[in-house]
Image (tube, rainbow, N blue to C red; front, side):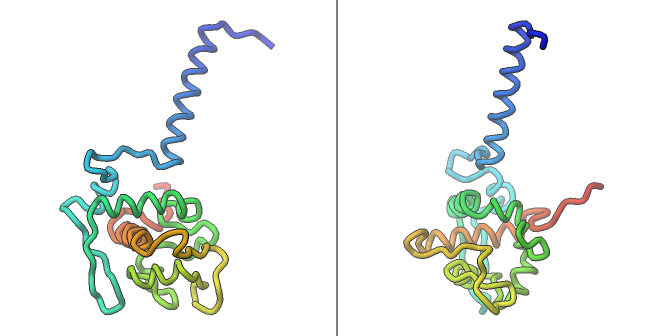
Length: 172
């Protein structure tokens, strides 16, 4: 095995550390935030014109969510859900994503804040026939209702507004 000159090893080491740092930012959600505590992607896609309205219940009532609240919901999503739901896909069950269409077609529908929170408290299969073991139950002792509502608001807003959410990008 040939010994590399020290200068080449130093350059290789710096490139490797840079690559690891970039990978860490991508994997652990370290995207830049704005000064007001709003994630840059939330500001760009979910709240470009101020707070966003999210469907609250099956009757069509809506709730308003600020960029800060949606950022908190995004952070909870990235920490707890993104492993199986990267970009709104469902990796263990690819035919069912987190698009509004798929959430609305579930039994019962999960396309509003209240039903989404109910699902997270007691996950059921897509057809509602039995408990789901793909998604873990979120008791009050883990996340309080306001936190789950922010998570639901982020997820539903992303499903409505983020291009490509819940879909596999084509190679075209």
